[in-house]
Image 1 (cartoon, rainbow, N blue to C red):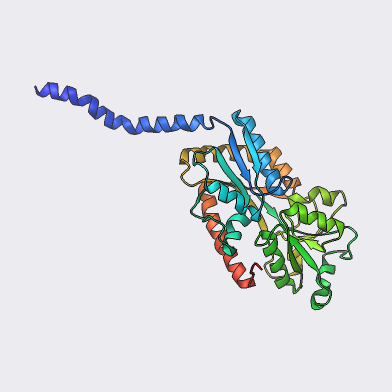
Image 2 (tube, one colour; image 1 turned 180 degrees about the vertical axis):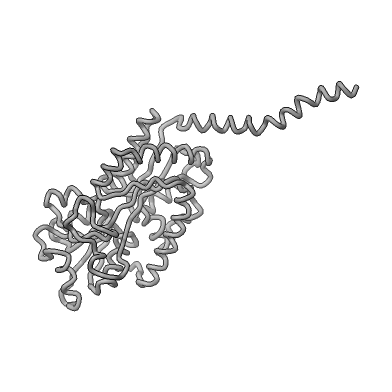
Length: 330
């Protein structure tokens, strides 16, 4: 009788010991089969801007890698907040993702109710790249160089205007920080993305702009736009003759944008890890790294955990900056 009970219990006991391994294998199998269908990548800015261009590089690489289409869908407006509000309502299955610059996550929510919590409503997947901000003017502008922009700082009668990609965005913070550090009196004009503000700068309708470098590289190289300086830590690789604003002050003036990929809250960790590993491998190849350098950009490919920590730190840093600069949206 006792022997019979032991025999009957053996399968049950073995199932207990084998269950974790079985679950892990099943998880790994599901991990390997993602993606099973096309992925929709919502980009928070118009086509042609830095966020759009770099998102399309990643989408193209992943499409070729997986044999599944990764389709970019542009939803511009409110410095990327419209796209992220849309992403929040999407199914957490890994087939709808969001790509935005830092402004939608660590600046806009400081000023207004954007319909989501940037820290708790999403799953950070990876930071694609970092992009320095530039100071640009029209080729025929009276502002011959960066020093000329600083010269009228004591003259409030000669009003100059600067454009940004949107109120409460990175360019807005860059312009106001610029005013404080250099004592200038540039007045803000918000646009819907870098492309529109650059058009007005080139035509002379706007004195200066604060776009990210990747969105204006070709225009500067072709002579249709003049770069006065960068707001990066050092000079841009492809523009060694153009100074960094840091060379003109001992104060902190560095302004850098980042572009990240997010998933809806609750997306399985296995899917997040699969996406991250694929993105990292594709974005850190020499050809992509070199191409991004030519665009004035730096590939990052941070892990989900690194991105989560960075996101909170960047939000806190910008919140303090907004308070110190006394920036409000009119």
